Image (cartoon, rainbow, N blue to C red; front, side, top):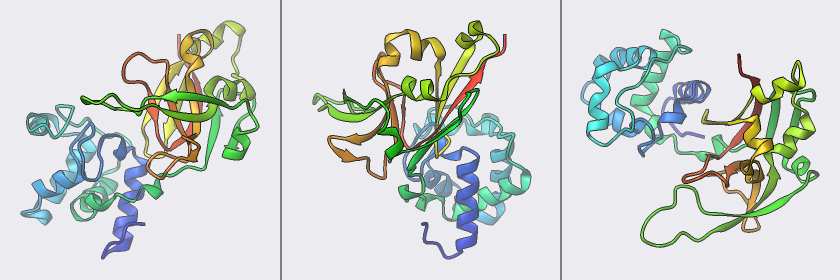
Length: 258
C-alpha cells in the first residue's frame, strides 16, 4: 500500500495507472520504455499546478516532438509517448496529479503479485488456476539464466519449476471454427502491470520454443518473491533476451484476422 498524505488521490492514480498499462512503460524510479515517474516529477517540480493540465494532455494525446528530450538524455527508450486512447481527459488529469505528487513512491511490488492465472478468450474451457491447480498438471524443472543478466561475470543459472504453456492450453483447448484456423491463433500472456508478450500457435505447439515456454512458480526451490511472482513466464528457448513476464495474470487466446 502506498503511504501518502492524500490516500484517495494516490489510490485512484495507482489504480488508473495499473488499469491503463502505465507501468508497462514507466517505473517508479528507474527508466523502462519511458522515463521514470520520479524523473517526470522532477522535471515539472518548479510549478506543478501550472504544468498539470499540460501533463494531462500529454498522457491522453501523447507528447509528439515535445517528448524527444527524454531519449536524448538517455532517460527513455522511445523518442516520444504515443496517445493513450483509453484514457479520458478527466482520468488524464487524475493521473497527472498522481505522477507529480506520489507516483515516484509507487514501489510496493505487493500490489502486482498474482496468486493465480486465468485462461480466457478462444478456448472451450476457460480456467482459473491457482498455484495448487498448476501443480496438478505435468510439472517440469528447467535451468534459466536470470532475465536481463549482463556484464563481465557469467550469470549463474537458476532452476525454475512450473508448467509448460502448451500443457495449460491443452487443458483449456483452443477453440476455432475449423482445424485449419488453429494456426491463426495468437496467445497473449499478460502481467498485472499491463506488460504483455505474444506467441503464435505454431511457436507453442510446433516448434522447440514450446518446449521452453514455462509458467513457473518456484525458483531454486523457493516460491517466487514479490518482485516476480507468485507466477511468472519465461520463454527459455528464445534466441537472445527471451520473452519474460513477471506477475503473470492471464493467458488469452485470440484469432488473428485473415
